[in-house]
Image (tube, rainbow, N blue to C red; front, side):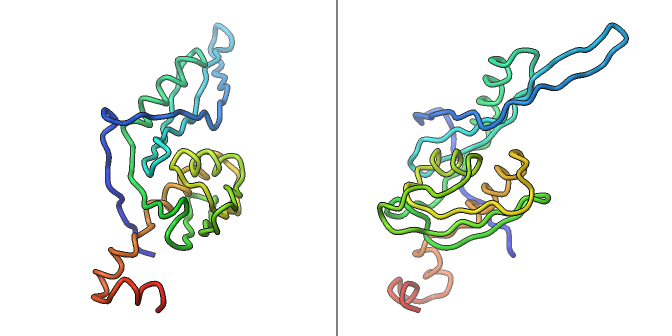
Length: 172
């Protein structure tokens, strides 16, 4: 399966909404006792085809979330959203996490687990069928979902690549 790099986007001119996917308390044992810190996995998106994810680590939860948001704004990508859904089926893998996303009819809603749901809703996808297979590790599920979204191609782009009409892409 060929890797497809999606368009990178600058965060400055966008109205982004943040969603915290996972917060993890991490303990480090030192000679003075235990030191606690937090890691936060955050997804940001404009709900119009732009989405990003980031990881923040800090001694306080709020600080970790803020760092995660900053990291997510540095990793924004644009994905093709057509009539509130995706153009075609796509699957992807990251580590032991495997995800499968399929376009759905208008009014279906986002049928997906919590981790994938956050990514798909932030991207602005309204109707989609999604399944997370294998590992449920939120970090790998988010990365696998991003891999799948980055591999999506617009029908016009496919038609141009194959040198056929747009009608033939849909009916062919």
